[in-house]
Image (cartoon, rainbow, N blue to C red; front, top):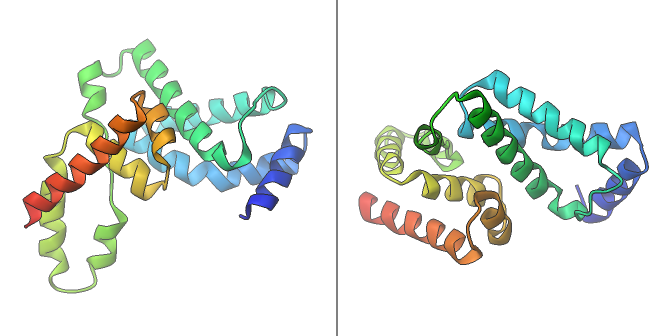
Amino acid sequence: MTTDLMYTVWKNFQSGSKEAFATIYNLYLDSLYHYGIKLCPDKELVKDAIQEIFLDLYLKREKINTEPEKLKYYLLSALKHNLIKKIQREKIFSDEEFESLFLPEYNIEEAIIDNEEAREIKYRVGTALKKLPSKQKEALYLRYNELIAYPEIAKIMDISIESARKQVYRAIKTLRELLS
C-alpha cells in the first residue's frame, strides 16, 4: 500500500470509517499473528491479544498520534506488551521461559528448499539459529521478516537503538562463524 493511500485510510479510520478499520485489520492481521506465535505458542492467547489491540485501536483511534507509516510498529509493539501482560497475569510461563519462546522461522530457508543441498543448508542454519540468544533471534525476525527499522525494534524490545543494531550485528556475525 502506498504511503498516500495509507495516510488516507488512516485519516478515514480516525474519523470512524468501518471500511478503513477493516482495511487496517486485514493489512496487519497476518503479520501480527505470525509475530505473536513466535512470542507465545498459545494460539488462542495470541488471537485474544490481537483482538484486544484492535479493539483498543478502534476505541482510541482519535487519540492515537502515530503516523500511518509507523502503524505496523505500533501494532507489533502493542501486541508484545499485551502478550507479556497476559502471560504474567495468568502465570503461563516464567520470565525465563517466556524469553526462550521466541522461535522465528526464516523465509531465506524456505527459498532454498527446492534443491538437494537445501536440506543440509536448512539443517545447518536451523542448528545455528538455535544457538543464538532469544534477543538476537527476535531482533533478526523483526528486522528481516517484518522489515522493522532499528528505532522501532529498540522500542518493541525495550532496548536502545544501538543495542538493537548490536543484537542484529552479533546474530549475523555468529551465524557467519557457525556456518563457515
